[in-house]
Length: 91
Image (tube, rainbow, N blue to C red):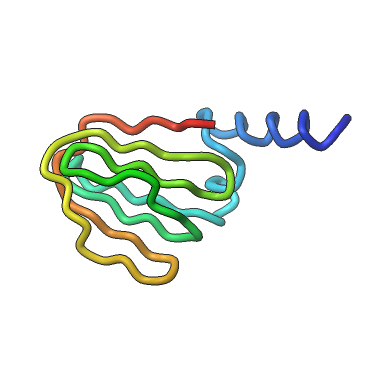
């Protein structure tokens, strides 16, 4: 089995989430749809009051909602508040 196929299988392990989240490499804590904390290596690709798109080692996470506000961003920690209406994983 080649590495590409093995990586795709890892991404589908736990509830459709990439294996890296399941293994604890990137942690995402969503708080009652009113905010989120992301721990791990990330890069913000798109940010507005209604969209927050973050690139991580295994793909991208796109948060959709209202009134997003980044409260803390340092090193490997990102924390934001706002009304989260949807979270999508983008390969």
